[in-house]
Image (cartoon, rainbow, N blue to C red):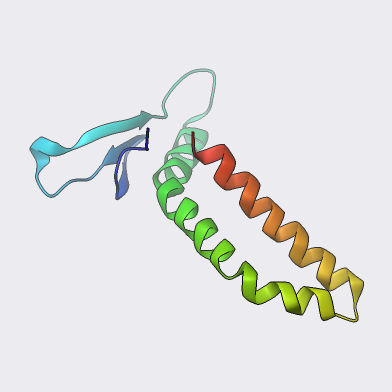
Amino acid sequence: MSHTLGPWVKEGWTVIADRKTRSRRGMVASCASAPMYESQWEANAHLIAAAPDLLEACKSALKIQALWYPIVESLENETEGQALSIMLNKFEQAIAKATP
C-alpha cells in the first residue's frame, strides 16, 4: 500500500491531500489534540504536510549514492567519509520508516 498522493497542504491544524477539485480532497491528518500546545499543532501540521516531499528528497539523494561512493572511498579525511556514510544511512532509515 502507498501513502495518499500529494501534494499535501496544511490548512490550519489539518493536513489535506490537495486534489484538483475540492470534491476529491481528503484529510491526511488532524494535528490538534490535547495535551499539546497550539504551537506544537502548527509545527506538526507543517512537518506532516512536508512528508511526501521529504520522502522524495531522501529517495533522490540515494540515487546519487553510486556517484558518491568512489568519492567517499578516496577521501583522505576519514571524518568526511564517515559523515557522508552516516548521512546516506539516515536517508535509508527515513525511507524505511516512511514506507510500509
